[in-house]
Image (tube, rainbow, N blue to C red; front, side, top):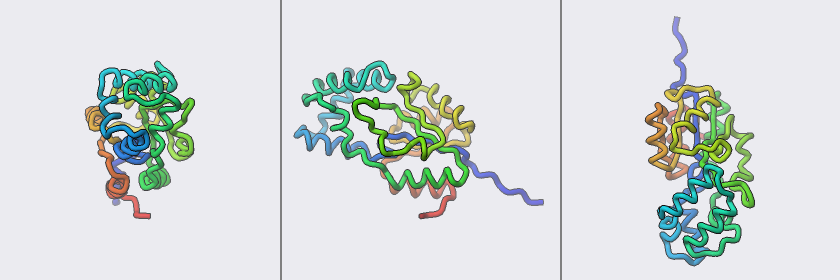
Length: 210
């Protein structure tokens, strides 16, 4: 008697910024243009050890978004007022990828968002995405005091989904995070273009084109 083959993947985990939103390189470029900054200014601030530490502490919930606004603004030479909102102004939803997430969940695949969070006050970058209505689980780093690429946060989201790493796809725009996930047994997928990612996920998961 023939048996029905089980699908390879039972879980699908998405990064937020740059995966469920527009590409972050473009978001940063638009920000620099609006602020009349030379291209590369933001990324140089991000790569500076002081900038790295500010992001790390914000993502862990050790400082507030307002603290980050003030300190990072001084680092790149702009006004601090609601800097996070100005920076993420063009981080609009990546609808192609979000549609695949909904398709996958409807097909019985467990879905999650795993985000190194950037605070939710005074600006909430997640507002309008209905993450809790769209995904089975939502894990923000600041709420748990651990961030990617720490293996502990991957283990946390896998536990919440109830799916083993070997049966999960992980989508991120950071090669460092993808490598960390791969070491734990997840299948990594680099996300740089939302249409390409959406097509790749549909092919891998056997989902029809909409």
